[in-house]
Image 1 (cartoon, helix red, strand yellow):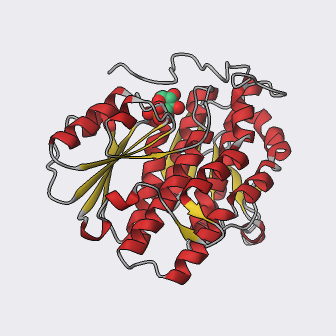
Image 2 (cartoon, helix red, strand yellow):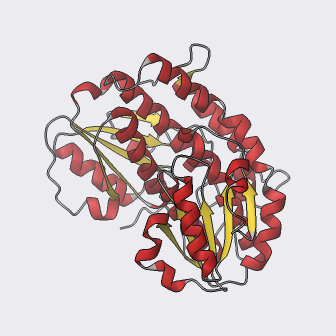
Image 3 (tube, protein in one colour):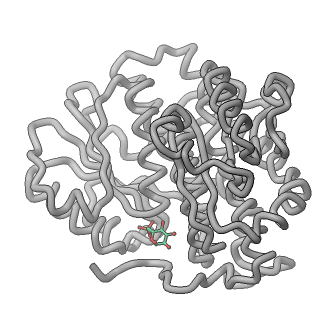
Length: 368
Ligand code: G6P
């Protein structure tokens, strides 16, 4: 029954729709909703108070989860984070000092480069933690502390529910680190935990944008290039959106920090180039509106993913607007991941590509 697509055409569709439930399961392991506190099993083994730095290493979609976490650990726990793709990290011979915590993120727990990075850090005396979905995996076994995602088996090659569950765990861990280091007080913890607790309900609402997304995806299946823009924690999500378009729809896509638009990608904009903008109405929304005006002035087709307020203040520059529920800032990259996944899914379905088994890709890359 676990390998059953149920009423869905593809495992990917099923896995996208499972997210409210599996994120809820995962969160229930890491937060105490009744007490409105984080409660991260295993975290006591890491001395966050005396930590100098966190090193994060991962591949593919898991790497983008790590990039989001960097923003969180720095903002909420005032902890410097260094992050790299595992295939670079493992060969860089980076110095590892005292009181460093190395964190690896992997759905399968078997990715060869991630495992090699883990072993390098271990040999050099770092404490090892892993966010993995498969508890009996090699990466889990070789770690000092395992933070399991409870996403259930993920069959679709392109990661969806494992990614959002990784983000849920990492958010709880960042809040825990912030509490231990004295940068998150009790009231802030309450606020952040309540925000995380709202995710399953918000995810259900986010999934309701699917009909809109299906409609706007049909013409996308005929484009050859696309751009994704975002700021803050939505910048890694823009890269994840671009990766998904490449993996599933074979559309050449790039994810860019919206502020970097004028340092290059703006030269590519014309009426054939769809530009996806991930922009909840947050403290930097106005800056992103300026970027959209620059795109619109050059005839670019904008697909804006935002909330009601963002839509109202977008100055009508977007051809299509996908509306998300209002969310707390910490929750945005998790909720906004859903429309991003659905865009690549529906574009791929219209194109007729093999959604669950895209050409040339493997679910788990155990070769180097
Ligand atoms: C492959 C998969 C991706 C995944 C990456 C890392 O490239 O196609 O979906 O994000 O490996 O896999 P891991 O199991 O380490 O998360």
